[in-house]
Amino acid sequence: MAEIETLARRREIGRAARERARRSQHAEIGDTDRDPVDLLKQNSAGRVSALVPLRYGRMGVSPFTFYRGSAIIQAHDLGATVNTGIAFPICGDAHLSNFGGFATPERQLIFDLNDFDEVAPGPWEWDVKRLAASFAIAGQHMGVSHGPIADFVATVAHEYRDRMHEYAECSTLELWHDIVTFERMIDTAATDEGRRLLLKTREKAATRTNESMLSKMAVQKDGRWLLQDAPPALFHPGGPNTLLGKEEAWTDTKAWEGKLAAAFDEYLRTLPADRQALIGQFQLQDVAFKVVGVGSVGTFCLVMLFVDGHGAPLFLQVKEARESVIARYFRSEPIAHQGQRVVSGQRLLQAASDAFLGWTTGPAGREFYFRQLRDMKVSAEVERMSNTLLQGYARICGWALARAHAKAGGKAVEIAAYLGNGERFSDALTEYAFAYATQNNKDYDVFMRACRSGKLEARSDEDMAADFRV
Image (cartoon, rainbow, N blue to C red):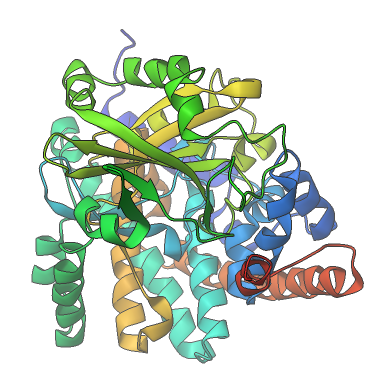
């Protein structure tokens, strides 16, 4: 085993990183001499062609939805900035909508990062910058004035810094077992308004279970549960409402029970023995293609419905894992399997991960990861938040991101020493967030002109759903 550095030496390494990247330099937004449309086209290659217009349609709703779907653009830009040299697996897409609540296997409701499609080794500050810019972009879209937005971003920076200093004092096991629970958030809520929202969200999470989804998504026919088509969001790959080409329509239930059984068995082998035994008590009922999110639209994403001997359901989501945009712009070791990359990164960054998290390889070499579709999962409805609630949400996100980085990288001492106790990083991050919000608006305008001119085809969910109405 490698010799462990002393704490004093680790602090020296963190402070020395300021010579590589001055804290004031984090205000720079990087290389923006590029065509955002070309980058989006590159990122859409290999996706389901009929769904790419829906991806662009969802991105076109606002500058913020554009930002959510264009992680590749910011990764490109950040690739040309100075970095601290302190790198480890980061989320890669840590905007404010990729945090939320979900249940641990022990049924404890926690708050954490919840999307890891872009996870890869990278500089820790890239995640902080994506989070900070998301508050500026979302705030401007909501009509929030400059002052409060600056406070949101500063709150992210301060909370991240202060929590990182706390984690720098934790032992390895203390840090590994730290969890941001809803009880802790309620106890430390700064306002009554924030406390009420957390209590309400906790109640809502308790209703978002596998059982609650069954009657909403499926019907029982001849003793078997079948998922109900609702194109373009949900459809059977081999059915009349499919949006897949003939060469892509291999993901039906019979295929999973037949030629894709080997892929499912490969997934099972990535689970601990007890989880394999658990899934063995369920029987597959149906498989459908499910379109999710913004940035993921067009990638292969399936939902599998199982039931146990009591008729109780289990929904598994099967998501395609493609090359991380972070890996394109930050050099690291080659990835053997993209699904394993997502699973390993998620397990490292999250305080507790889904009991059914695993990976496999499907037809045509596509790589996938598995997780539950919904297990007490809740997301913040940012558009409905007051400035007070947004301030509180910024604090919680900064806390959760610091915890994730401290655990995954084991570099809390170095990062804390780099950040120090002053305002230099916070001031630079605030300047960065506003500058990148301005750049994002410019990119959004270029994108929308491309959609209007026909260079890109963009369609809304409503437009595409109309294609299937009689």
